[in-house]
Length: 215
Image (cartoon, rainbow, N blue to C red; front, side, top):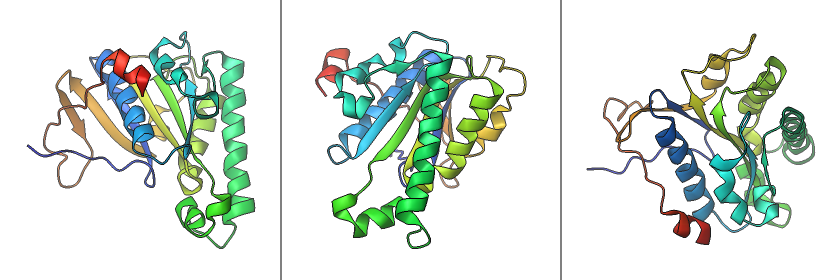
């Protein structure tokens, strides 16, 4: 057996597609975010949590983090989601124009030379896409997925592949901008990889709730 590590921060966005087992898909989503938070330097990552059309229970575990890291809430309302997507787009433009300019190719290069003014990474975490997202919000997501990685902004999202999107929403527009992890069963995951893509992967499990909350 070999560990399967998927490049994420410093690479591109991650999309978990749950064809028949959305519960496993959302647990994998939480596991990815939890692992990223625990293996990164303190306060180097800030989360924006969204559960369109839900109540926020799928991502509520991360609200045990300080508000400066978790955002303080899971955004569920349409107006809140649109506002947060706009703020992330503004952040991307600000980093490009005020930090990277034509000097640094990526946020990693900028932070390496400017430790005193290093910019935190931002993870946009979305559960159960494409629920309740309209065409305009979807285009905002595509914009973030295309332009975010250079500035340290990444999307990690779970998809309900059997859910019909709103009119005008093209799911492939977003999926083409990242790595797809397709959950086929509770203990089977397929992933796009040149060397290991043909092999089934056992998804990482989420620790017990008490342990997650202590993290």
